[in-house]
Each structure stands twice: as structure tokens, then as C-alpha cells.
Length: 319
Image 1: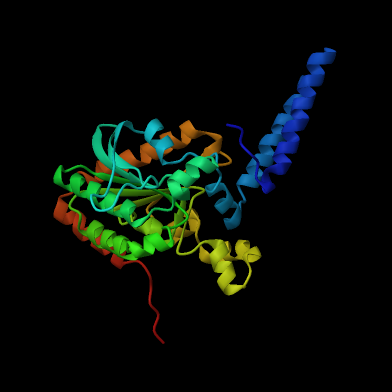
Image 2: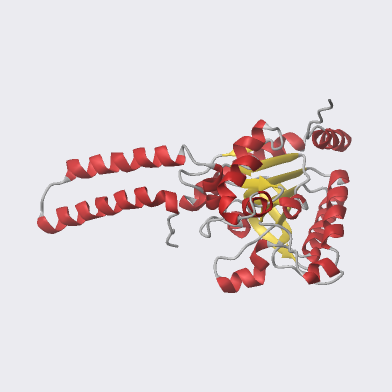
């Protein structure tokens, strides 16, 4: 897939075009331009390090939303094996925005619950742009209860702009389905590891995000509201989304400092879409490391630490 550059990446694209021109000229005219090409390659690497090493919160949001970024099913193919999808919530229907099932990662058999977006219009319509309906969250809970029954760890891959806010979702009680998941995941008697791999939008993300360990890819974001939504409320215009992104403290580095997540997983230079295999390997290594620790704990200890983890979040200041 051809990776479309973002606005702030255009200086890199221009330099890469110049390098291609040098290579073509050298080949067609039989002129030795090796020295010039090496200098251009060095300049490209320096420009990449400068741009990607100083990304703003809004630029990271743009990377998290990139359509070429690996999605949950890509990670299931690259980092897991033997994925068997389970469908339906046994109440209303299936939700393609929330694939769930059994899989193997390393030496662990596990259950995976995930959000899934589409790369084109047809698939996005089928996957509802990664915004799950109530039946998606109920299906996830059904599968997580199977994990508890068979003593399998749960791995959650979060990538959603938010739960679907449409009329049908409200009629089928989207808020209730998320609230039940929050409650039940807190008490689920099996290890849970969640990872935000792209967008972590509000309750839609939290509905499968209550976990013993919460991980986050370097260029993902996790927020109570989208930058555009925040800008529309505070500044009355979506054009203020960059300022909102900074104010929301939604990047992985910010959330690690605030102790709301447990680990930041590094991505390839420029984002996971520039190296699916490396991003998947980094995610796999992080998941296995935390599973190694969690599976050694007794279930009662695990539940107590999970409770304490979420009770520690947030600070109250009284005058």
C-alpha cells in the first residue's frame, strides 16, 4: 500500500523526490553521483529525526488515524497465530467493528477482543469505522467470560474514535453495555492486558480497556473526547483541534507521566504504518512481557491490584 504523506511530512517527501531524481540522472547519464546521493540520504535521515522527534499532540493524532496504520486484524496476523473468530452476542447480532476470538501469542493461549476499522469506504461501512454497537461490547464480554471459564488471559486491542452514538445504538442501550463491561472487567478472574494501538476514544475505548496492564503505542492517543469535539465545545470551532489536543494530554508520553498507562511501546520512525512487522514485533514483545508477570500472580492478588490501580487514578484538591 502506498503511504500518503501527512502535511508535516512533506519536507521529507520533497527530499526523497530529489534523491530519486539524482538516482535517475546518475543511471541515465552514467555520471557518478554517489557522493551527492549519500549526502542527500544523510539529510533525509536528519530531517526525519528532527520532524518525528518533535511531534505535537495533534500530529500524533494524525498519525494514529493514518489509514495505512496496522489495524487489529493486522496485528492478529503478524503478532499472534491461530486466531479463531467468535461471532454474535447471543442477544441481538454480530458487530464487525469488534472482532473477538481465541488466539495464541508466544506460549500463551488467550482470548482477544478488539476494535477494527476499514481501509476503504466499503470496509469502513461494514466495520462502522471502528465504532462498535452495544452488541459489540456484549459480544466482547461473552468472549471474556469464556476466557475466565477456561482460565485464559484476555488481550484487548483498542482502536476506535468512540462507541457508535446513533439512534439504534441508543435504543439497544450502548451506555448500559459499556457500563456493564467496566464493572465485569474489574471483577474478571483472569489476567487482562489492554493496548491502545491507534485511537482510544472515550467510553468506546474504555469499554474493553479495564485491565491489569494498559499499554499504548508511541503514536496512539487516548482521550475522554476527540480534539475536534473538545475544540467545538471550548472554542466553538473545530479549527482549534491542535490546541485542544495539547490541552487534553492525550499522547502516550503524557499519559505515562500521569500514571494512567503502564508502558509506551515504541514504533518505527514515522509511525507504525512505516513498518507493520516491526510494530507488531514490538507489541508482541510487550504483551508477552506483561503476561509473564501477570500469570505468576494469584487471582485474588491480581484482582486487588487491579482495583487499587484504578482507585489511584485522579487527584482531588480541596481548598
